[in-house]
Image: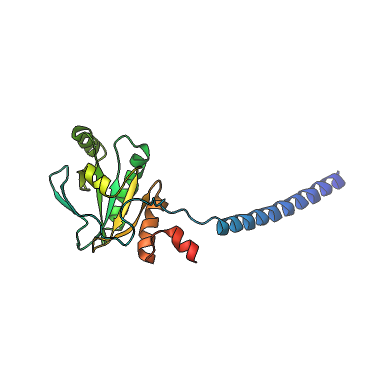
Length: 195
């Protein structure tokens, strides 16, 4: 009986050592994969004003009656976030936008932009509790920035120049616009290619 128990303990010890070695090997492989697969920033389309260009200027009225200046120099950078009430990814990103508005409020203002039927937009605006953001309806604004897919964001600096832009599907892609601005590059992908 003692021999069986001793043999079982030895086998279990060998298995435990094997599992520890397997965990270390897998951890090493994960590290290698992380180095090879760079973070994915916002997908920048080759349409609209280029990064570094002065943005088109607009004076628009928001749904709540506020007058909104787009593309003008101001005390803060602006993030134009193009969305639609029928876009599920846009709806998923709203809490992320609210969080970013709070955490980046010292240097950034967020403007929501869409087009379409005003009554549907107002209903979406109220139901989604977006009153902290100016929300403008302007097909011309989307055309000026050549927005063809949603959700799309354009980051303008305090001088009215385009600093970063692209399709946004996650918090990481939204924050990649901020990172690109901080690094002085048009996109995170450009930075990684030059590094």
